[in-house]
Image (cartoon, rainbow, N blue to C red):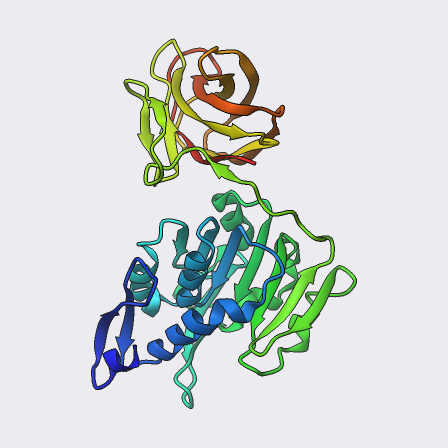
Length: 358
């Protein structure tokens, strides 16, 4: 990687052993060293005591890529708030379908920021500026958009998140099981430490991060999450509606009622005694009625009903829906039926993302 950028300036594409996608670096910058640190040492250096399934990384796109490669079943939100790095960030994260890229700072909604460059090191950091061109997204709406009620891991560079020490986001930080703050070997400010008071948080240190674990989280069982829809995964038997459906990424789809009968999509897969089922729901904002989603489970072949659950959702609403299932082993047909609540037969597009057995 160092050889690829030596004596050059501009965007350089390099391969990393074991990665399906190439990486992009800006030759003449510190990108090569940042990438080497993240990819070679970053994940191992985190020393995680649990298997993360929802990860947010603020200010380190290379580490987000390393985590996506290390935990292929995890959803990763990678936030790059500095506009000058947005193009590079997009080049590196877009090929990874489990990474959601956001090119805005997160913190207090509407706060304005500007980029300041350290004249000694050339490092960029965001600073509050009432006349700044960069507008902060609210932390809580971002989590809601992702469909995350709680998450496992937040790794953040304070230079990319000036609001990290603001008490107004304490409730959002409590949504994470572990928060890791990049220190670069220096001491973090006392006002930032105050955001993680004991006994609610347990503090620890690592060579390059301050670590805070939420005390309410005890040992967690290994996840048995089994996705049931993945157009880039193993083939499954599927009955698609003639109209009113479309895929959303690789692991989701949209349904929209367009007649008196509900629009229905059916999948067949093997159930190994799952305890529950979950999906991320979002009814796209548009004039129209609320929709009713019913998910049914029936034994393949005999058609015997195993379970059925229903949920209503309003236009513009996002919801993480989880419900328990009776124990069942064997092939099962899962039907997703969507109809307008008012019975008109017409409605907007309902996104159903990442449906899975638990």
